[in-house]
Length: 102
Image 1 (cartoon, one colour):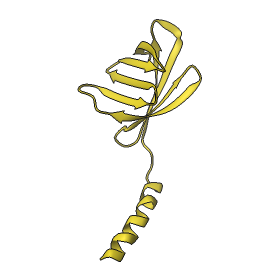
Image 2 (cartoon, helix red, strand yellow):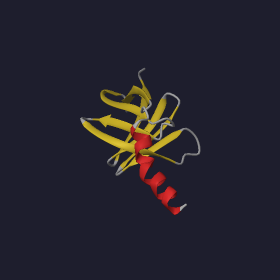
Image 3 (cartoon, helix red, strand yellow):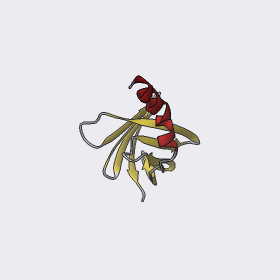
Image 4 (cartoon, helix red, strand yellow):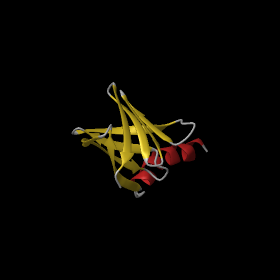
């Protein structure tokens, strides 16, 4: 039994290699009333458990975090909270209020 468990555990990463990644987006948000301050968000994974955020030429991969309402994603010094067409973003200390352009 121990050998079977070890073989199955070792093979687990191979199962993920064959899965197709689900992608939703990209969605473009205008932030803080500045049309040049665009935030592009692409949700990744079957359950949208990750988000690729692109802002001012920087790309960050954020993980989904607990949220009472809406969807929240966090990375080092970055927080993206989205509900409907609106988002609140903290990008490396800068607070942004955003709305989708899609």
